[in-house]
Length: 67
Image (cartoon, rainbow, N blue to C red; front, side, top):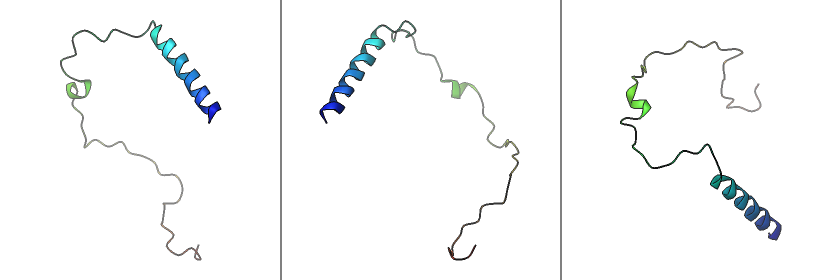
């Protein structure tokens, strides 16, 4: 337990330190976008992509002795 707690604390401290000096992170302050990307684009739910089934279809084995 002591070893687990030590490793957890060390990894947490390392991740926190790296998060403070992350140059890629953008500031949180600022204006939010007007709409999320999912609401901007219309999605056609009826358009299905045809798929190819390889192998035998799955059948539930209700009797384990029978194959």
